[in-house]
Length: 113
Length: 110
Image (tube, chains in turn green, orange):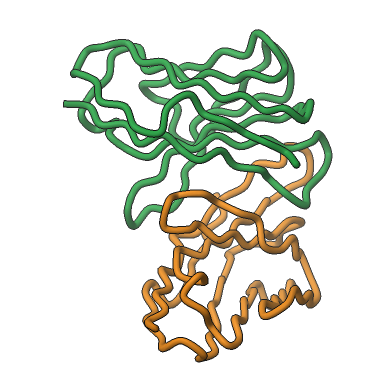
C-alpha cells in the first residue's frame, strides 16, 4: 500500500515563526503536492513538484515556499507564519503520468497564534 | 481557471437511505476523481472517472463529459459513509494538477 506520512497531526506556532511541514511517501512517486483546506473553500493547491529540486506554483503560493531535495520528501515552508495561514495542510503524491489516483497524507492542522 | 461546483453542500440522511451527489464543471476535463474525507481528515480516492460509469460496492459514479457533470451515488447508507465528498478535475494533460470542488458534507444518522 502507498503510504504518505506527514510530520505532525497538530501544530501550534506563533506569528512570525518559521514553520516546516514535512511529507514523505514510500512508493517512489515522481509527483508530490501541497494543498491547504479551509471550510467552504475545498482544497487549494499551494505548490507541486514533478521531480527532485523541481517545483511549480499552484493557485495560492503566496507566503509559502517548498523544498524537494530527495524524491520521497517534499517540505512546505512558512517563512514567517501569519494567523491567516491557520489551516489544514494536506500532502499528496502520484506516479508520473498516472491520472487515476492521488494518495493523500493524514493532514497537519496548523494553528498560528 | 476551471470552476467546480458541488451540490448539495450538506446532506443529512437516515441510515439505509440512498443519496446522489452532483459535481458540475465549467470546461472539458481529462481527469475527474471523487474523494471521501473521513471525520479524521483522511482523504481516500473513490473513483477515477473522466467519463462513463463505474461501480464499487454500494457506491457508483457516472460522468457525462459532454454535459460537464458527474454524479456519485451512495446506496443503503451506513454511518461510516459520513464525511465530506470532493470532486476534483484536471483541465489539461501534462501536470496531474487537480482543481477541487468545495465538497458535500454527508451525515448519516443511525
